[in-house]
Length: 319
Image (cartoon, rainbow, N blue to C red; front, top):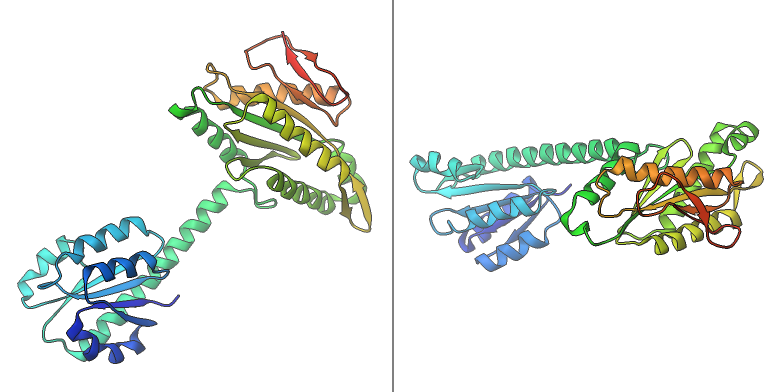
């Protein structure tokens, strides 16, 4: 990635601009604090800021704030000073390196090459950390949140103070007769069915919702600020869309159906696994009734559940 060098000194701009270009990817100039703030806010690459500490000390705080806000694009501060004895103060303030005035062209070039290399390494580290975080949280085949992460997402949502008084619903979904698909067409084709289904779930849910692969052919969706009626409507749209869509498997087209269980958190629900257990019970009832159905667990804790509602695919359980 190209490194951006910002020179914050009018007298240095003309003197150093052309000379420094080979050391970095791009050189821009700024003559006041407002301009440097704009450049830092809009930048989309690692940056080196070269400035005169004696005349522009206020830039240190601006650069420190930028480091906190734009974590993905590291910033390197290179200060020009008149006194070597400022060294301890400079490093304590978070400045990365300094040069004495008058500036030696060769030494400045070396320092810029070092700074560019440091920024490159920081970017590599940042990208590696992002990849590791993604891998730790996502299912490698479908790209959905994995088992542990979708549970953590639900638990974090239940733990939020603002969740009290707002509905959090979950949808647990299982592919019907998926073993038959695997046995008939092979596991690679079964994996393809899971990936196509995963994409459909992402297409049918909102950006604020979270979709995860709970395990095998089971999926879990966390619906934020969504009551049981709205969750039921979404689940029905998913069930219908899956049923009506023929999936391409090898040279064949396969009809897949799903069974769905829904649970909505009440104020007593503070444990993610307990709420998932309710949805799983409703899912079991949908399976037991022949599959390709949606069942909704009663929002109040209940040991005995029975079917309510009308229609072949509609259902609610209550005392």
